[in-house]
Length: 181
Image: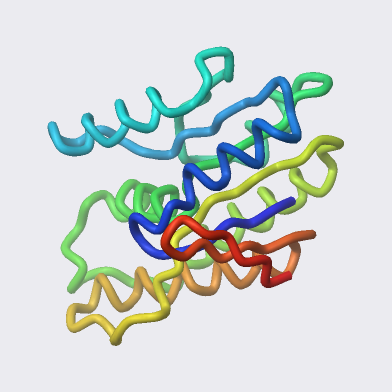
């Protein structure tokens, strides 16, 4: 398992796509985004245009460990983009879109951690490289609002779990990858 992290627009996706393409002829691309407006549709379309047309795509954000186990094909690598988007979508769905002021974040985080644990187990049993993209959220100030604070905390702990289990961890800054593990 190879984890690639960095800030927004740091070049994580391009960096990871190049590494995946160099190591795997066949690729399953797991996309965790949900199109909610025209801007997000444009972002998704840009990502689709940037990756090779022969890569298979699976879209969703729940039970990705099971997706890896059920979708894997011989000789095929995996690129999962992205963990923080997956977490945001899971938190929204599991909370029913309730007001952040009313949420009990402990069970939501426990759910996310279970999802990450299962993902790690699936990656460790997969014979080909699994590249996972995530956002580094911990380099800024503590967010002012409750939802953002809890999101940064939950995503940060999930990233730590992934990094601890990963064979390699890369930090991408301004399009340049720096191997940190």
